Image (tube, rainbow, N blue to C red):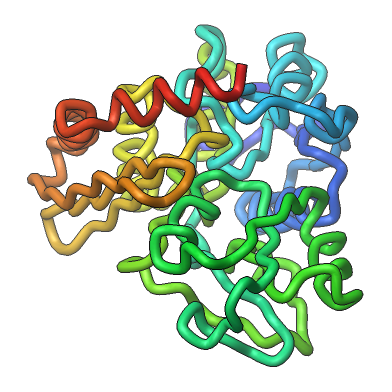
Length: 317
């Protein structure tokens, strides 16, 4: 694909978007395609649904990285697709050398949601309630405030998780607000969990558009969808995660936001039983977003985060 002079003047060509085949992933990718079509009406865009290891294998370890992205990245590296659309929280903190995160569209609500029938908060959940989640980050933060609840494994796509709740297999489940909003689920009773109780995963609520590093033409196209502030916030969170050597399956949380020319980062590492939590809140000038992520990680590691993460990794071997 090439771009002539004015980068909106794109030679007609079908641009292939790759994404997972789950209901939510397809919805997200189709949303991106809709935005691209508005910006580049002369281009044709098609969606390639790709089955990943995480979709195919139900028994994976918590420390496994990239299980929802590897096959998509392989297709991108091999030229079978031109743009990969990911939920940023699924992306490993470091990418293959030939690929890069080129754009982050406007971020959805990054918070976590407690779903139950009837609607409850953590304070009003009955004693020993069965709370469904497969996320160590979520379960650890739940146990920090409600050590009496029973955390039960809950995997599957968002629609599957909600169905299991409705079937009475759980008293409550925890899901991302972004997924609920994008799929437009109705008839639910969501309780937005405050950040003071539960920080999100790095990149939660954000979509990442990944391309081949040398593909300057595609870079110019996806840049039309990039939200600069959200991109910087996501990069700050991912740098924090990378400095910890962490992945999205570990009890690590990070959320950055920008106000004016200042970027704020809240981050935490939590023990699996919820008893120990190391949480920091720092800020810096917007141009120092990389250093902010590194400094926050260093501080958490020095305060005991390394011992917590080493324990989690050892127990997952």
